[in-house]
Image (cartoon, rainbow, N blue to C red; front, side, top):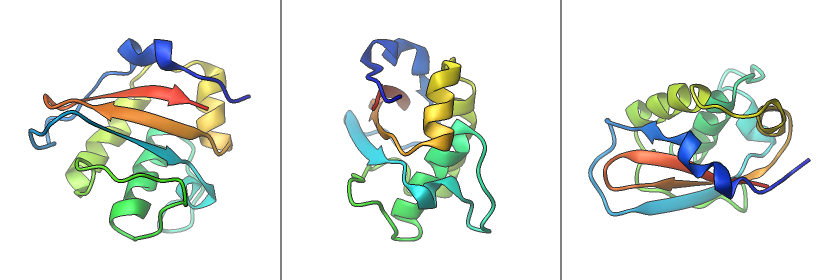
Length: 123
């Protein structure tokens, strides 16, 4: 069910006002099994929660998936919390939501120096 979503970039703007000003950056990550469960072991049911947990696993818990890349934005909890709510506000198709929440896709995000982030692909 994986597919490229580069054309959807504009519809995935996430304003990250808590993020520091920095040069444009991007990262990609595999949303693996650990990313689908909260720190308390509960299954996550939203796109934002899964992506937030992926960044927490990478930055806070030191448990990245082998394909995960680092980023200079989501190392603090405030930025990750904002990421969670903003991703859930985006207009993802039901298939894309299902792929992220139930599958293990490789997703890429681009973060601009003015604090916007864009999902650039889901595969």
